[in-house]
Length: 116
Image (cartoon, rainbow, N blue to C red; front, side, top):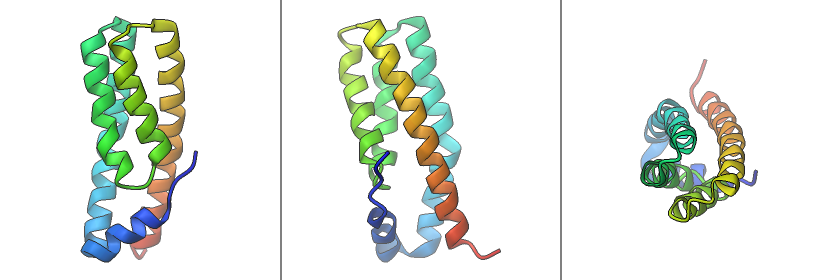
């Protein structure tokens, strides 16, 4: 997954390290549940819930430069209205993998910014 690592540095320039670490903590806490919500909506074949859950992934990921993840979440949100469940299954699987990579990246960024 491509991550624009300069985005985190830009956030730090704007708000300082405390802001960045706080935002990282929020994403680390919330994103796994949001991704689980996407999967759960897919399993239930609930178009509205899937769209809403995918939408909830978009903003927090884009702010940190995970544009591939953000774009895929947006595409998944839009595709949910069509209800093409096999294609959505593939998208959600890719979304989960990209989210795992992104969460690992954020954990490393947090560790780098917080002295031991």
